[in-house]
Amino acid sequence: MKRLPIYETFFSWQGEGCHMGKSAFFIRLFGCPVHCPWCDSAGTWHPGHIPERIEKRTIEELVAEATEQKPQLVIITGGEPCIHDLSGLTDALQNADMTVHLETSGAFPVQGTFDWITVSPKVWKKPIQSCIEQADEFKLIVDSSEAVSLWEQEIGKQFIDRPIWLHPEWSKRADPKILGLINACVKEGKHLYRAGYQLHKLYRVDEEDVRSKPTVNLTENAHR
Image (cartoon, rainbow, N blue to C red):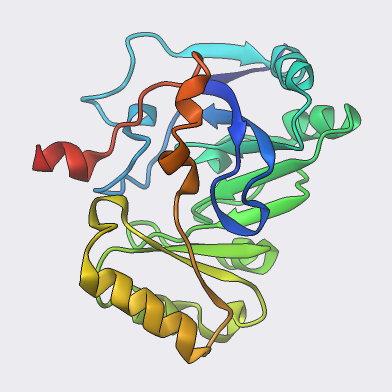
């Protein structure tokens, strides 16, 4: 019986992107080789934050837990979920009449069938062509004044017909330069840019589920 390494599962709502505000059951898988220096899910990979015990759970257990919540969406995330073969999990969830979304860096092939794919590319391990083509939306983390132009050069016309959310990196969410850049990109209308935010953090909704682990943001921890 196949088991997947799970960092956490919890019931919340989607705080980002085109499906913002919809109730969502999150399945956060353990493991990530991308290692973003400002990662806010560092417990999935960082030696200083990995839990002592990594739980491995069967697909049947995960589907039963998700079904009990009756969410509008099931969101599979990480870490980097695509380092795992997700086909058995997505098949089982969809057979249970669940709508299944994926959040990935796009650096690894997608194994599984999804109703929606969000690709958030990272410079530390760049996205592969198949993931760029499969993406329904992009989420760019804006952590510097060059972040947007970098991805315009890297991906360019390939994402021109899909929504591109510009999120301030969380530790810079009040930085006037970062916010000003996002404002200018949206108003310029060069691509389908949209101003993004992690709205769930303002509501603290994830924390209402005792299964949700505390957020660990590497950059903010370093500033403390």
